[in-house]
Structure formats: structure tokens, C-alpha cells
Image 1 (cartoon, rainbow, N blue to C red):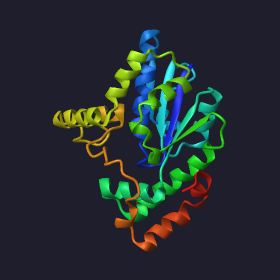
Image 2 (image 1 turned 90 degrees about the vertical axis):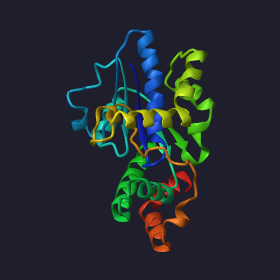
Image 3 (image 1 turned 30 degrees about the horizontal axis):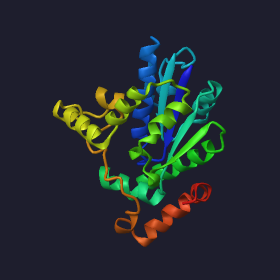
Length: 233
């Protein structure tokens, strides 16, 4: 079985990685006439009737996976990919793009940070930092394919790399928007790729000082202290 659990701090380019994982595994599944399941899930209920045990390949994206979901993926011996970001920037990005309150955004980011800290201790986990701009590095496609133990041909890897470029994703979202794909929450297209209308940010780091007050920044630091210590933020 081939598969992956993709867990990211909010606004850490986890959706980009989820799409890359899905494209790599989809190509593998197509060549070997296998099936692929890709979806978002934080708990077992969101898997619906899928047990994953009988799937040929799967990708699960999550921000705060439950213990049961983690145990399931561990039992299937698939790698975990963790996307990280400075938590103050994560809070800033969410507030800027979605207009959510500081309190709600902080709660979401802190909960996600707690799960990432737990998963980072697993030997099959691979961490990618937003600040390293992994989403714009050409080597990442080959590195991820190797981590998945896929024999993806080089020309296919290059094709996939182009399809997850900033310009390609921006175009994809614009085309979906023109089709009316984002008029309702949970639209089928959004569920498939997890992209939404305002998803692509500027990719910059260190922007929290212009958005957060000193008190808010201190509150984020306190709420994510264990995460920051583990990952060096």
C-alpha cells in the first residue's frame, strides 16, 4: 500500500503539499491500475465508510488529527508529512485571508500546534518549514516521491512540478471561481483539491508585527510554547 498523512499548521502550505502528494500518488495509481483516495479528515467520522485498509493508495490532509486517526495511519505504515510555520505568522495569515477573530484563530492554531508536536516524535515523520519555501523548491518533488517509495519518471515529476507552481495554482483557482465553484462551502471542487478562492497568499514570512499587537503576539507565543521549543520558533 502507498499512502500519506499530511498534517500542517494552519497556513503552512499544507494544501500545496496535499496536492503534490495526491498528484504523485495519482500518477502511480494510474500506471499500475490502482485506485486513490484523497480527502480531508481530522477524525475517523470524516472518513465515512472508508476503512483505508482496503485502499490501494490514499492521502489524508489534516490540521489536528485525532488519536484514532493517527493510530490508523501508523498501523498502515505510511509516512507522515508535517508542514510547520512560525505560529504568529500562521495566525496573521488566517486573520488576513479569512477575516476570523484573533481568539478563534489562536484557538485553531494552538490546537494544530499541539498535534504537530506529538507527530514530530514519530520516526516516519518528515518536517517541512514554510520559512524554507519548500513549496517553491524544485528538489522537493523528487524528495517527496522518494519518501513515498514511488518510481515516478523524471518527465512526470517535472510535469507535476509545473502543475503545482504558483502561477498554475492561481490559474486553477481562477478558472474554478469563474465556474462558480466557490459559491457554497464544501463545493465538490474545493473538497477535491482543498483550494478555495482566497487560498494563495504572498508566501512571505515575518509579517506578524504589522498585524498583531504586542499583547496578541505574546499570547500566541505562550499558547504555542511547546511547539516553538520543539521546532525552534
